[in-house]
Length: 452
Ligand SMILES: Cc1cn([C@H]2C[C@H](O)[C@@H](COP(=O)(O)OP(=O)(O)O[C@H]3O[C@H](CO)[C@@H](O)[C@H](O)[C@H]3O)O2)c(=O)[nH]c1=O
Ligand SMILES: C[C@@H](CO)CCNc1ncnc2nc[nH]c12
Image (cartoon, rainbow, N blue to C red; front, side, top):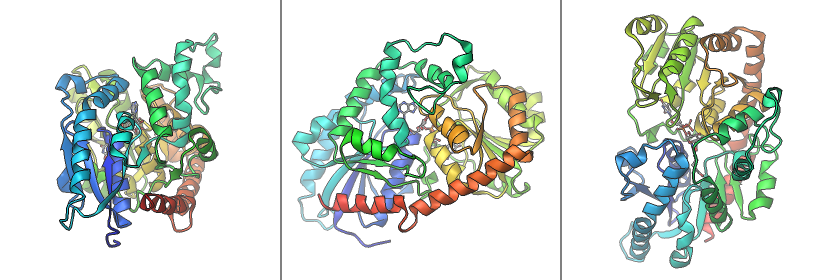
């Protein structure tokens, strides 16, 4: 760890697991470069301060009620958060800026900038008052971020298909999505999509720079295009999961019995299945997934997050007994440790950004079952572009899942996928190592922040 460089950075994550993890990771990276870190966070989904004794945490009151947090319209949730947080955030930051002029040793560190999730849009209203450089942390791939601004237009025009046969075709409007993916994406409940995306675009363009946790190796061609689009400095600092694990920022309690259970399994034999912190499914979909895994006759570790199954359908006891012969079902798992484990042979995933990147960094091939939003795009990157996974094509059926597991573990297709995954993993590793493209981008970011 380098010693302090006398500068403090203020971080402001969006309060969902998939956004907290990359922000805490960024905090660890910047801290290792000598920056002091203050994290401002909402009371909703507050990160555990005690897991990060080196950082300062400040909580603001978002005033969200239980029911307001339990919506299936994510855009609505983020819009509401933006409305509720503007005043408490401004007050909190103003106080901080004032006290950093004071003389105590710790507070003397100069606040150099604010880095917030791209989903916070009210912050641009404060630029004039606070006069603090503002950078955006973007948790998407560059390709998704650039591409997704077209969604409101497609929605307005009523993106439709005339022929069933077109469903598998590439969606020219937003490659590498296929038309069927785009239909699913546009079908999501998102009442406030257009105004929200407009505000994200404005806030991004008026920022002092954008940070992506992706890199050129994962986002071929998009980086130069994004520089043209947004006209602000862009830093693609890459995923550095091996140096800075994300699991310490978990909002849920991890089931620690997973690792001893994995220790008893053969090399590359286990399918790990998990679907992130937002996706939900019906009880019968869960049962199809569980039977698909069970019928493959391979050991499996399945995460069923509390609240992720719609309705009250629990897995019937006699089914549970059959599942337990081969599998282990937990509520939340130490995912990164699991993906690192020699016993893991594949990852049945919803393709959230963090899960995909963690899987690539550990070289674990995937079976793709995206549920929403950006997940559809990463699933196509995995299956159609990088070719390091098998896509279930949105069919949640036990036979399909069983077949995918067998192909991945025992057939030529799986062998080829594993070879390509090994190459992709090495490429990304090289990128974050000294003189790699992501490494150099991080150096530029550190210089940029230090220059304010
Ligand atoms: C289910 C489960 C997850 N995790 C960790 C792994 C990941 O770092 C993190 C989940 O992040 P993701 O894989 O991106 O998934 P999720 O939480 O759904 O992420 C949301 O945010 C992501 C980033 O915006 C989006 O790409 C997703 O579409 C969106 O749903 O939580 C665990 O450590 N244990 C678990 O059991
Ligand atoms: C507000 C954005 C950053 O610009 C958070 C990223 N994650 C997400 N953003 C919007 N809708 C989502 N549905 C699931 N995850 C989502």
